[in-house]
Length: 92
Image (cartoon, rainbow, N blue to C red):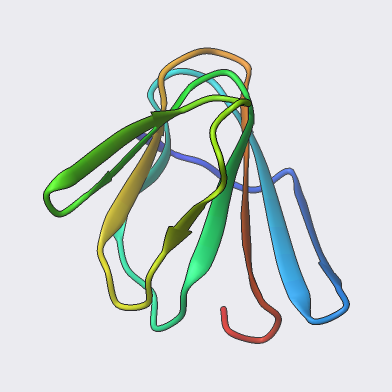
């Protein structure tokens, strides 16, 4: 998998937003954080994998909360996938 870099990253009212525009086989390889964050898929298809769990998200999927210290991986399944990670400002 090719590691994605956010195309937009900004803070507003205490939250950090990182927005990714990716193609198939791009995303964020297995990792964890000391903080929780929400992941939203705005376009395309995004596979979220964590221990004993896998979900394919699209624009109709409710945002997913990923808990702190929980390993996870995000991988685009389609070209033109857009996803966003949202977390507390200063946590990253």
